[in-house]
Image (cartoon, rainbow, N blue to C red; front, side):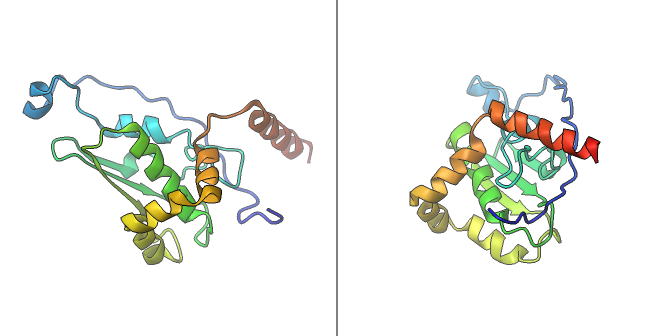
Length: 176
């Protein structure tokens, strides 16, 4: 990419999360012998997805947060809203697709996954949400080797080179 969509994103610290055991299990989860899935668990799955444009995670750019996640374990539904760093972000569909793929690969098949832009966060909110909700479009996108490669890069664990790039950006900002 020759020109960044958002050349100076605000980078946030990784938040510490603590799971508080409530001792409450639904009858369905108790009968199946499993712990219910909650928003924190979903957040743990998606927080370290790499931004397609910057060497930061979606959590560091405040694109995803635990507060933007709703889980209905009993009904098998997960809803994630995300907020791009700029309203005209051309990577919004790729970010949404990466979120969907990560959760499809991580969660049991009984879950229906809804990925949407946070209301008012994008200039093409309706069009992007429509693409992300269309199962046929998502399936077709994942059959495209180039697009699947981009999604897999977003889902890959952070590499030392990305960490080095972050240090260089920080050093350059400090020097100026």
